[in-house]
Amino acid sequence: MGIFEGLTLESLFLVVFGVFIFVLGTTSLRTQMKAKRKGMVLDGTVIKSNYIMKRESENFLIQNYYEIRVEYLDNGHKAQTTINSHIEFHEGDKLKIIKSSIQRDNMIIYEDNTLTAFTPWSIISGGILIAIIPMAQYKYGAQSVSFILGAILLLAGSSLISKYIKDKNREVTNVDATVMDILKTYSGKKNSKLVKQTISYFPILQYTIDNQQRSMRSKYSSSLQNANKIGSKKVLYFDIENHSILERGPELSMLLGGIILIIIASIGIMSAVLGT
Image (cartoon, rainbow, N blue to C red; front, side, top):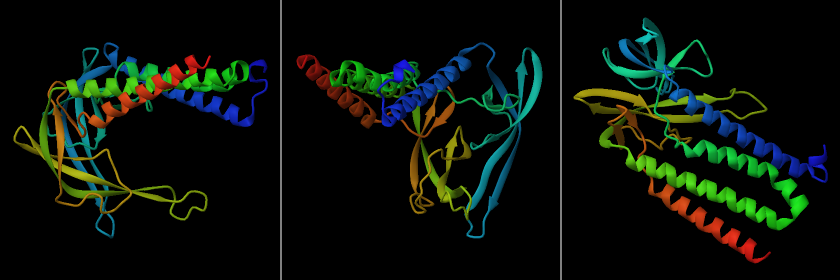
């Protein structure tokens, strides 16, 4: 217990939070490394697609997904699996699948990781730095905290900029989409006294690629019922290399946010150096 000597309950909470961030980073890193291992990501072909839909009394969708049967080669042997997809696929469509990290016997659709190779390492490093703040402050004083916070901001800013650069370098074409329906989902029990039930509204988007009309449930929801109106227009992005649909392109705010964080971090570190 020597390393925790002199730490308050609030400081111990900060250590636990840092460990939590560290675990998130290592999980992201394992996911990236898993996808890069030979034989983990497999090529599949859709041989059957079944649309599952259910509405509630208010006419909102409460179920909306595609049950697709996929044939693939695993170690040279043909195999089949059933996957629930929020994106519409047609018979004969090609896609990539990977074994689920949650249910090992199940396969899921592989979506190219939008995180950069640098991001998991920055999360891991950030978690370590957060966890050591209380010990550094206790042993070396407040100036050490300024250095650590500066380093955390540098990592965060660099991660945002690297993400923007990766998105910017993707070869994509714009795809016009229309909100054709709304999926209503519930989180928590309706009459629970401990946790209030929350409602999320997901837009169902319709678009056309290769002269074929398709639909998908957006990954992004809103707690506001009227946030996405049926008939409203949106822009999607077709990733040519990975043959997949992206809902968001490069965001300039991410680049500007990264630059601002780096500037603040640099000022903070310089102030701490000049104050020594």
